[in-house]
Length: 405
Image 1 (cartoon, rainbow, N blue to C red):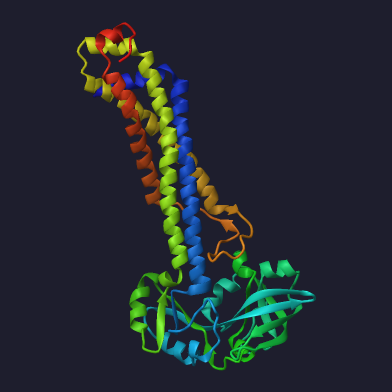
Image 2 (spheres, one colour; image 1 turned 135 degrees about the vertical axis):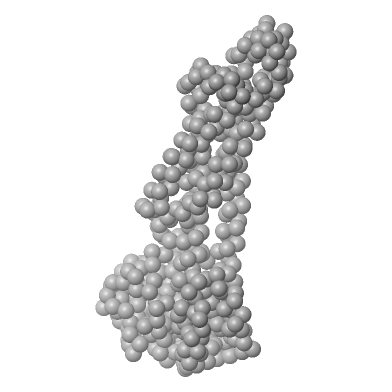
């Protein structure tokens, strides 16, 4: 085997430029796939984390008839005495925080312009609001504020508003009417998710209950757990006849389904790109076979078995592949690290049902890197079987005279 290895190294050194370019082709393909895998995984993970932090929580407690698509304010669709219920739930061991939230639809009126919005009544002191306070210009609303709201940076940019400005909101009520009031913008939050920031307006829960006439009701109880993996067990413990408990998996089915679809699609892309780059190695080996026809004939004539000739070319393929993989891991690693910390700016995607940030950050797992490395090795070796078999099946006499198999 050592002799075959040395012969393979010698043969690759005969045309170093061709061997280098063959390895580089695989390296570039692998590097791009590592980068793509990191970006896709990062965006999916970030979207899910953002959805949990801003929209779904780890759990939601709500009435069985509540329909978030309709943003119903009918009393039978709302949670009664949500603050008292939140206090009881917060005493459970897995629960980190729990807070009531009330959702309503509304319209912002600024001069002759009007924009549809989602009103979210919150407990300003709740820990669940930390993502909304993280990048805040101005002040957050207080529980007893009756004229203040907080809007998103994307909305502020869109309609040219700043803290202290006055804006009129028309809000749907539980009776089906519309109430309106002028509010002052206390602060502007920025989650860097334009699709969320552009449509979500925050106001104190008490004020939201008053303007919607929801009285002492909330749409949901927003629950964060100490460990999201405890969601199913916690949901089972909280189930009751009056309310239902939804886990973050159930509340983010669209994001999870999109993630599964993206992963399946990426595997197809992996195979296509690796197959294309593997053809370069196959072409290199085929050229080597035809350039060394007489040498192969000599080796066969002196007694080298076809299987050993085949192994020799497979070793050449393995050396080219391993060289390409090493270079590809370096290049792909550098690109992925850059995208992990610097990110790729995409801008405003608008409202898509999935919270996509304005900047994508890569998040490449060790498992993905290993999977791509193994796939590159396997695809290349399988592809190299063709030129290796051609070399192994050459007739010695014909090969000595420069003939073909």
